[in-house]
Image 1 (cartoon, rainbow, N blue to C red):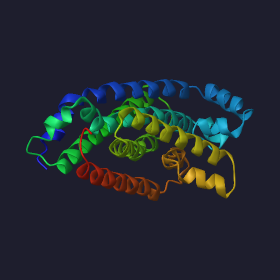
Image 2: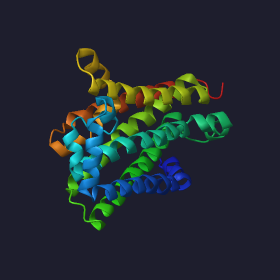
Image 3: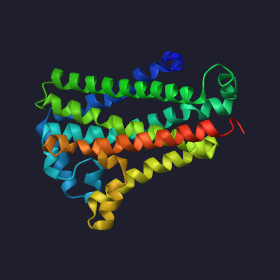
Image 4: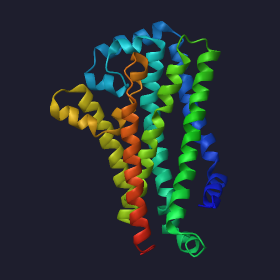
Length: 268
C-alpha cells in the first residue's frame, strides 16, 4: 500500500469535511440553543407525552424523562437526526469508492496503472473513512463549542462520546454501499438498495423499540441505528460490545467487497 490513492482521495474530497461537518455542526448549535432553556425542552417533553411511543423513538429516546435534561435532549435529538444525515454521506462515499469511477470509465485508466485492485480498493476505502471521521469530529467540536459558549449545563464528555459513536455506523453504511455497488454493478440500483437499507434500518429500530416481544427485539437487533444509541451514554448503560459488533460487520462487508472487486470484470 503506497498511500497515493489515499492522498489523492483526501486532496480531491477534503472539502466534504467542511460542508458536512459544518452543516451538522449548525444543527448541533440549534439543538444547543433549545437546550439553553429548561422551559422549552420541558414543553417539548410534555408534547411528546401525548404522542405514540414511535414518535418518541424518532427523537432517539426511550424514556420521556430523558428529554427533560439538557444532555438528554442534546444527545437524543442531535444524534438521532445527525445519524440520518451522516448515513446520506456514507451512501455517497460508498458509491465514490468504486461505482462512480467505474460508470464514468475512469476506473479503466486507474487499473491500467501499476496498482493492484486490492490496494486501490483498500486505499480508497481508507480515504473516505478518514473523511467521515473528520466530519464526525468537526460536528462534535462545533456542538461542544455551542454548549460552552451558551453555558448549557451538560457534561461535555457524554456529548462527545455519544456523537463519536455515530462513526462506526457510518462506516457500516459506506461499506454496505460499496459492497452493493460491487455486486449489483449498476449505480442507480446500488443507490436504491442502499437507501432502502438505511430506511429499513431506521424503521426497524423505531418499531422494535416502540413495540415489544421477541420479534420486535429481532427487528431492533438487525438495525444499525440501534447500535448508535446515544442515550446509553447519558444513562450510563453504554456497552462497547455494540460498537464492536458494528465494526466486525464493517470488516466482513469490506472483505466481501474486496473479494468481489478483485475477481470480477470491470465496466462490463
